[in-house]
Image: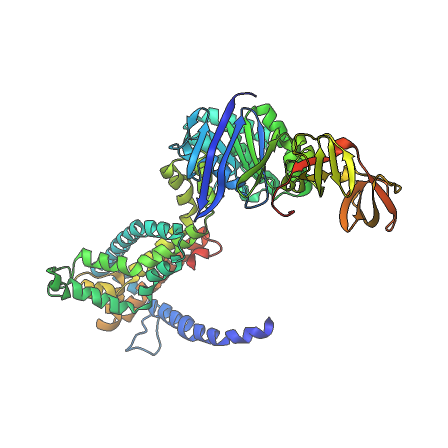
Length: 350
Length: 271
């Protein structure tokens, strides 16, 4: 898990004078499940296509397995891709789709048979060999696409929002299956998605991107619990983001009150952003040393209630399993380690 | 939608008067002794079949097959790359280029044939550039004429199939290790086959039944089946033999259209 498989150095890419990837550097280790997460248009698919060899970068280096890929066309890279719309060959049946790469490599018929059978078993599509791909459901097509890619035993598998067109239940099942598959095959996955839940569920490492720039790289827990900026905080799950001031190490001031926290290393009185996750706030009776507000709305979400509390004209979202009444006066309670302090970024809240 | 059906009546009348009735007449003529001098009582006969064995007819059939297949082959050879190139264009002038290809079809075919004819005589406007051809009555004249007439009919169906093809399939083929050549013959060509079949038939049919083109560019030396039919009807007054050949030709055409429909069930390549 330590050896670096892919290294991207200072990648730049423009389309018609618009730079879509700005000086991006990133590395992927062997056997790592890495997710590129960001809103549409953030450059994540372009980055994936650069690694796959379908786009050329304007500047920088893609180093794969110790070699610069500059002059290696897509078809010579030991990388396979599961495309967004699967891109299955409509004129071929399931078996021939999966065997496509092996036949290009001119393997003998028995080897091809065995490998295709194994790949189809892995994606639970045994017995579908002769089925035309057009006669299969979205979920099945997606499995064929995965089988077609992994049968070539690539060192790296690229997945471009492969779960996007599946319904919720199937998508969740496939998330676990993909993660399991990645662990049992022992190959690196780069997974592109705009779905934060998908990213958090499956990944070893999440890379949050915006406008062609990496916002944060980290384990899912770190990304969720310690977002580095306003964008990451609001993109990964629902959150309450408040402006405040860092009075000194471990002491933060916001909503007119001082709170102890676990963050340090900021300048004295540095303006900062604070994020508090909705599930970290507990409602109690109003108190003088707490943030007090009025319940504005309550929505039943199944697992929990989503409660909107108005504090000095600002909305706080709270997730709680205990219902309250609209109009109740409440105080917001949270522990010091649930206050996440982030460097202030210039952008407006998004 | 029932009340809209009335709007199709003029077309029905048209079909019955100008297609159905004449076809029946031709069919009757081909199996009877009715002709311009005998409108009265008639008897059924298959005697016209013996005309099919005449050298004039067999020769024309051979010519028709020979020239139409060669012309179709060259049209495919030239047309496929053109269609591929047009389909892969990313500029906003794409429609403009496709229109350029279609424009010749809008001018009268006879006019274009005569234009070629003028160029193929030794004395022509080309002498201005120091060029002189003497091609009238040769294979070259017929083939160049046919390819230039029917090339758009080969290009358009192939173009429309390639245009609609999902570009990510090409990425997928490359991703799986196929080089440009392998990508073409394992993915792109098989997926465009319905366009190739339509294009082939759209070229083959008019080439096979052409009669103005061989008459002008072949200078009467090269006769196709269309010329023989014309001869029987207008010159030798044997409208029965002419009818029989026409009917057989129609049967061949119908079979070819059935072939198109088998390859292209939605008819999308026929534009």
